[in-house]
Image (cartoon, rainbow, N blue to C red; front, side, top):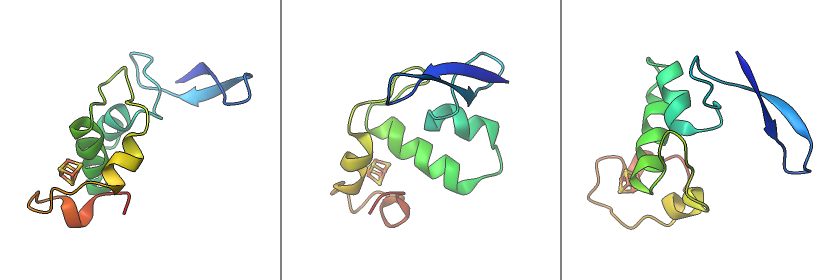
Length: 82
Ligand code: SF4
């Protein structure tokens, strides 16, 4: 399934989406479409930790994960952006 979304240049592009129409650029939605992927699950957990939801991506969340100082978090050494 694809969903027309606005690209950075203002044009419309077809982005993959789940059956509910949520774009797979959202890490939480993408992780559910890849249930066996540890990489997607970790990325989704860090995104969720930084305030992302199924229909919202916190601006700058990737940089916040990169700057994460919670070294006692079990995912810290595995976080996607370092
Ligand atoms: S590594 Fe940091 S951003 Fe990722 S889940 Fe743990 S505390 Fe949250």
